[in-house]
Amino acid sequence: MKMKRFLHIITIIFSSFMSLLAHGQGKPGKKIGRSELSKSQRDASHSADDDSSDPPPLRIDASLMASAQMSTPLPMTSFTPPTPHPGDVQSRYPWKYQIVTTTFWIGELPGENNPVPNLASSWDPDWTKKYGGPDDPNPQHRTAEFIPATFKPGQNPFYIALPYNDKLREGHKPEASKVIPWFQKDYKGPGESVCKGRWIAIRFGNKVCYAQWEDAGPFRTDHWQYVFGDERPKPNLNQGAGLDVSPAVRDYLGMNGTDVTDWRFVDFDEVPVGPWSKFGDNNTFVQNARKAQERVVSNASPTPVPQAPVAPDQF
Image 1 (cartoon, rainbow, N blue to C red):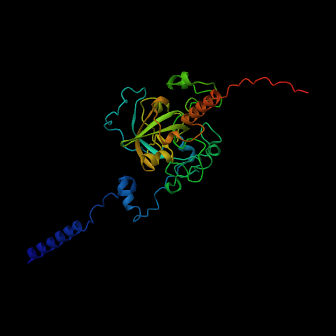
Image 2: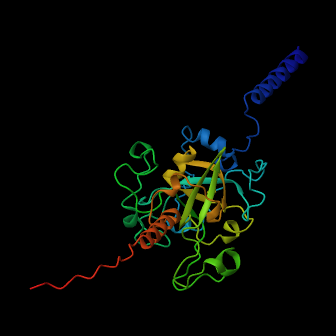
């Protein structure tokens, strides 16, 4: 009888122990904190898990935006360059492939990813005034000639920005004469940029657009190793963008506001006639046409025709 009672007690103890294990009441496990979760897990649990111990969300300091170190660029490190187009191999300037490209415009006001207004350019304090007003990016407010519907632009609507400025307050940056291929050829004195107005080709899919370099950015003005060398764009708030294009370039190529393009510098004699050749006092095509017209007018001046002598009045 005692043996049966002993076995019964042992059975009860064993059952209780197994029940504890089955309900997780044994040795407590380590609580997984939010810092140990993956980003996707944190994002998925954010709305359901209000952990007051978490630090407040990071606020971007506008002064850090110019350093362009606050985000990771799109993974463009592995790619196969497209088949060269006719003339690419012989060109003096190589293509830069798969560059994140964003849209900006003359007169653009500061925004979340645009800390600096575009009322002036790096080389022209009166950029918006000379253009004729803000370059409205809304496609519904633009014409089939890729210009604003409300005015004829006084500057070329096909413009871009690259993250380098060759100018200092006085003179040029020390590396400018060494890294800019056309520096010696185009140098016009210490007060004038040799980058402003330079033509580039932008390729998106099977279309190529041509535009003039009129501002420095996005975010940086010192990355000559990318603009003139082999480096990739630095990380920045716009997914590592290395090229800004105008609404006209965006619309001609049919790209999104942010997209991926190829680009390269071109000499002017490589630029074909197109919608980029019609408008703007800074436009090389327009300037050359005016010079040609002035020569025609000058050469067409009539040669004085000798007049027959007039007989004196007879009295």
